[in-house]
Image 1: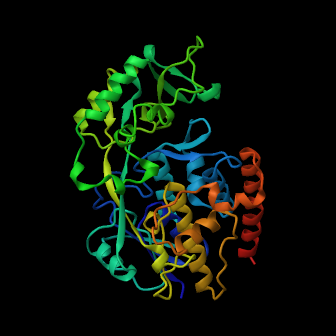
Image 2: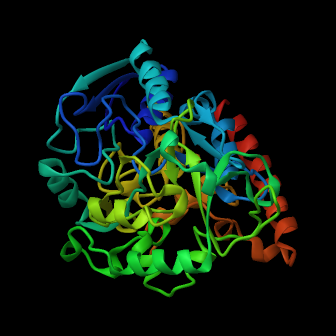
Image 3: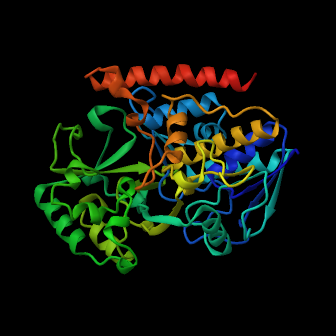
Length: 432
């Protein structure tokens, strides 16, 4: 059989469809866009980035997400290729112009001779061979059917940060520059102690939207709303997103707290408030963030929002190849499997497609090696875990303790070198 159904055209679904099509399979890619949208989406293009335009660090040897990106490049990732073509300056991070990024992927998908796009709402898990990658906002009949075949769903709450117009930033109260003088890709908005205290007081007393819909225990640590983080203590933000360490203006002045702004698009006409995911009411966001001197007259192009993300209990229903254990050829991919983050979601789509393609070609299962980020994330979602929660890429997955190297920088470098050696060998095995 050379026909495959992929449901969902987010990062995971597009990666899956692309890889299968490149392997010669006829792919039907189903998505509700552009006829309708989830509450968090607005761009008619596929692979829309909702929470942030950052794909995190590009440091291959010092950051696990940077290492994962390189593993994906080795395996031929569509997401990584599009990200490089749409990148915006962001210091050591890989950030993209969201609209350009989504447009590049959409055009690649639409123009592929082996991909047919069907705009429809899918109400049930399709028959094998198929990959379900409908994302953490899956709702309606499909969500109910997924729950029935996987034994129920879990959930957490995710948030996005506000975006402001570049020409509304008061540069007389800001300065450009990266941490420790590395580049000038960020706009830094400093605060004195008094200004920070006023901001903190306003933030912690501001009115939140739909607070009764969630509890603190349901908030994902990796994308915590600023106001929830602030509730942990007055200095919490100064050791987190408002950290002033390594940031000095042209006169060499240091500050009590600093909010960084990152380019949202290639033109530099919009900036994202880094680390300021929030669930405050829109009017409160404007009031609170305007207390930061550089944003006193800021024009908000988009306010931060919070939404519920659903993921399945993967350890009880999926194998490390992302295949539904109760089926013969139905795979899941993306955030709903319990991998957390843009890059991790895209990687899961690529891996699910690799495994499905091998199954359809009659080849044996070949998991990514242990001690690679791809391999360990795959094993994480399938390993027995009574308190299963979404997982980002991290060096803790790679068995660094066994190296017995105390220097973290050196340890990470060796872990990355080992992982890249193994993933390169894996790529060669896949081609045999």
